[in-house]
Image 1 (tube, rainbow, N blue to C red):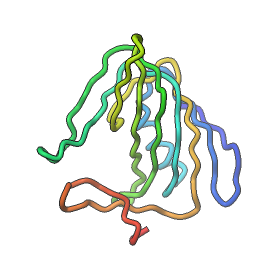
Image 2: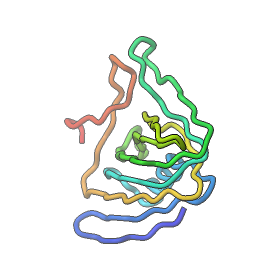
Image 3: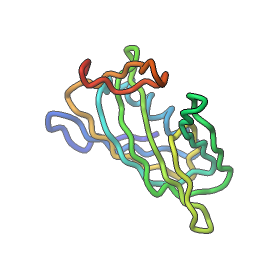
Image 4: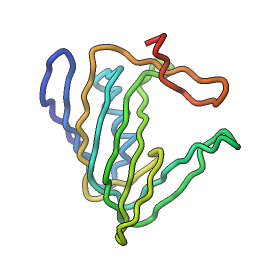
Length: 146
């Protein structure tokens, strides 16, 4: 992944460009660790050759995995960075477009970028913290602790 800082006005704004074969979540979390990002939001566009989407199923209290093994356009990807157990974590949702114009979407679990993913990440000077919600088992942003 390549990175460049665009601005610094109380927070930082970066452009991050993933390379072919990168896993977007893994790269974003590594960037957040290296730069000690404790609160941020981001958007991204590009394409994947493979992607695993998740749908949180309340019945089983876990994500159902939906794999897409074909070239797709990243039509929209939005997410945030917050701190969980002392480490920055990325939470992202994505909508991808297939060759026939249909779309698939969900929680971004895993991906293989091809040929690029262009991310604009805006860091804020505060910290967001996640805590595990006992009812769902999910790590959710805890506004009271942030």
